[in-house]
Length: 243
Figure 1 (tube, rainbow, N blue to C red):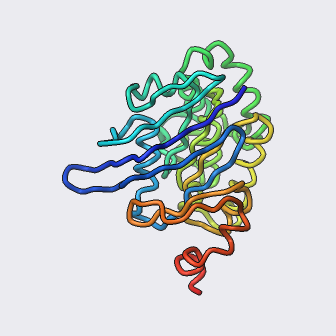
Figure 2 (cartoon, rainbow, N blue to C red):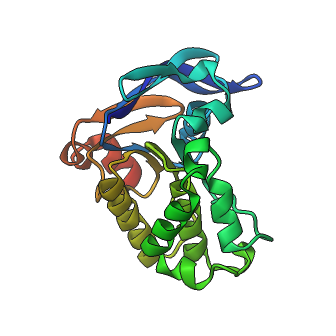
Figure 3 (cartoon, rainbow, N blue to C red):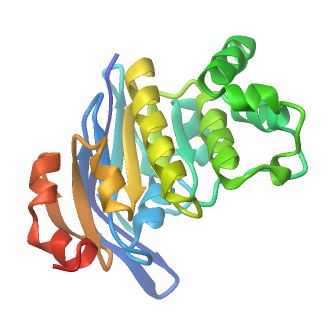
C-alpha cells in the first residue's frame, strides 16, 4: 500500500513576506527524504503547507495513497489528517497540563485511529517504554527527550501512512538527538512509513536519509539523489561543515 507526496512549484508567503518560491520535491513511497536548511529558510512553512495550515499562493501538493491522488491544497487540515498524514511539529507542541496518556489519546483523531486506539496505545508504549512508565505524568514536567518521544508517539496514535517530522533535534542534547533519529528510522521501517523530515542537523539527518534536498531562502538549491551525493555537495560543505 503505497503513499507518496509530490510538491510542484509551490509559492507561499506570510502577508507581503515571501517564504517559499517555486519549490518542487518528490517523496516516494517508503522513502525517508530529508529537507536540509538552516533556520528561517522555509522548512517549517513547507511542512505547514503540506498539512493545510498555510495555504500556498501557487503550486500543487498531491498525496497519493493506495493509488488514489489527493490534492492537499484543496483540503482542510482535518481532511489531510484523515488521509493518514501526521506531523510531529517543531517544538513538539504538547499539552503540558495533560498527562502522557491524555496527550497520546488526542493523537488518535481520525476515525481509523479511533477504532484501534487501544491497540495503537499498546504499540506506542512498547515502542517507548519510558512513556508507559510515565503515563500519568503531566507532559509539561517531562524532560526534552521524553517530550520528543511523546510527540512521536502522539503522531503514531494517528496510525499514519505518511509521517512529517519538523526539526526533531531542536532543544535536545546530542545523545538524545541521535536516539531520536534512530527511533524515527525504526518506526519508518517497522510501520512501512513514508517519511519527510526537515532538519538542520546535517550529520544526524544523513544517518537515516535515502536522499534529500537543500533549501536556501525559500528555494530548493540542491537535490541529492542519495545520502552520498548530499555528503559530497559543496553547498552543504559551505553551510554545514564550514569548508
